[in-house]
Image 1 (tube, one colour):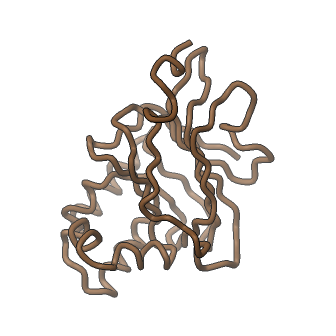
Image 2 (tube, rainbow, N blue to C red; image 1 turned 90 degrees about the vertical axis):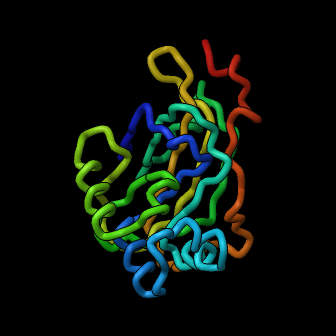
Amino acid sequence: MRHEFSEVLNDLIDYFLLADIQRLARFKEENDLPDDLARAFTSGDSGDRAVLEGVVMPLAGVDNLPYRIIFSLDEPIPALLEPGNRVAHRRAGYVLQVEHRALMLFTWRILQHFTHKTLGDLLARYQVPGRPIIELDNGWYHVEVLAGAVLREGFYEPAFEFVLKRTHCQRPTDDIDVGYRFSLEENLLPSTLAR
């Protein structure tokens, strides 16, 4: 099964985050972290712990472009590996825990004022069709990230694809790089995105 979302923006900050956001809220409460979760994640080790515990997956170095976001579950071939599409980055070894039957892609700005009210407002906004959120069974998922350009309606669109597979593993691989930069402008020149 594949879910696609078009024209997803990064709010002018070079980060996307992938998580069950309510699981992230529980992590914040359990670790007595401040409402400015962004500062907590960058000034201490709580951000790295959240990644290692399968709470959140960061994507750094995201260029300010409109993206097609693809979630692939149980697909034999990822969309970005299909003929005609272009892959610039392929990273495996991430894990995420889903506790509330939903996985969403969101921006760094959400972490800057992470309260019950802003979380509720965000969840309400994500009920509008076209937002990068999918429903899936609770449990642990292995996540492989592909970034590049996907051909849609005769044009190449910058894209991120998340290939999700159920797993019993509750830790990412030991060599996971939480600061890996997924820049596409460095790897796919603008001329290669036009057709």
